[in-house]
Length: 263
Image (tube, rainbow, N blue to C red; front, side, top):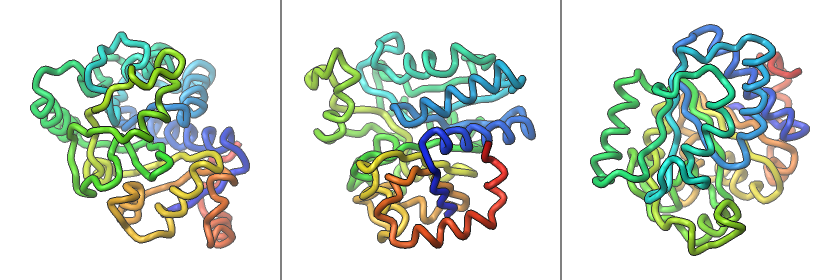
């Protein structure tokens, strides 16, 4: 694992966008795994800037999003399809036919999950998977106690997850937040060629400490990234505040080629 402790969320977001930029310029047919929520927004803004100002071409890029709420149409303001269109897809030259978000309105959820999994495989697999992390260590909507080998599936959401996300539903209406979602499994995430996790703020510090330095456990889904062939954490000082070996990670980074991603 590469643990990159950044001065700010702005620096971390810039560096991840720079990494993705390099990958796309090297392989225009890059397959991205994308995340929603507040964490990746600055990174998406930087990708948009690179497209508009630096000619970053998304015309051949394919994308697969981590998850979607069950029961929400893509036009719903709280749906993740709506989020991705608003925060990224509408501002770059990606072909929306090549962008994929799980279908929250599918009539057969289990079949839709299996089809999504097969679609990722048929697309050649995910080259770079972008992740956030929940305060309890969840990635995607894989809640604690989910199998670490899980594939795309329907997930019942914990109350804490729904409370965290209620701010996006009509001013914090918890009753409006769906109780289930369709999500890539943690096993699906582990299949990606590169996994990049972003985390900011003291509220994420316990989850980051568990994911990086704790035992691999289904109670902290992100800890499974210890088994990933190429996992990279880009976190700010606050999210890193409970890491016991932060100085060592900084020393490793000082000798890493990831330094070239800095502005």
